[in-house]
Image 1 (spheres, rainbow, N blue to C red):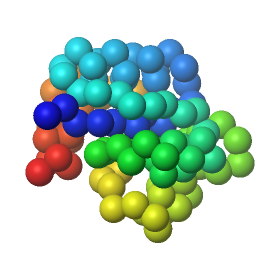
Image 2 (image 1 turned 60 degrees about the horizontal axis):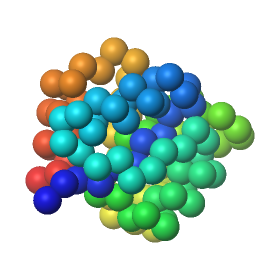
Image 3 (image 1 turned 90 degrees about the vertical axis):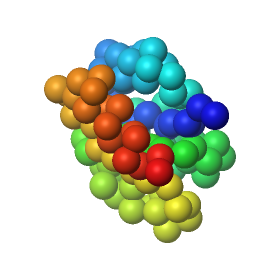
Image 4 (image 1 turned 120 degrees about the vertical axis):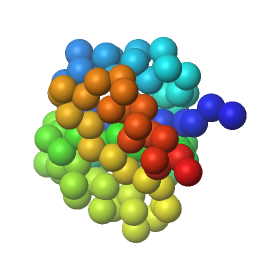
Length: 99
């Protein structure tokens, strides 16, 4: 069974890279957002298994505030990727959260 992931990252090139890397190593990217409000909406609608959330996002809401709001509604692991995350680091993070 593939793990469903929501990616939230304001930089489109970084977001696409994360999505492609996740799909390459076997995860299912169910949605992506570049701002906190969209991340919350997608999380509630799509109910992903894991959310990757950047701290700096477009709009008025940062990733920390969006994660707090999501956690009020859903019991879903939320992890903050960074620009230097390698495939191995990402895989290790997802393995921990998928247990």
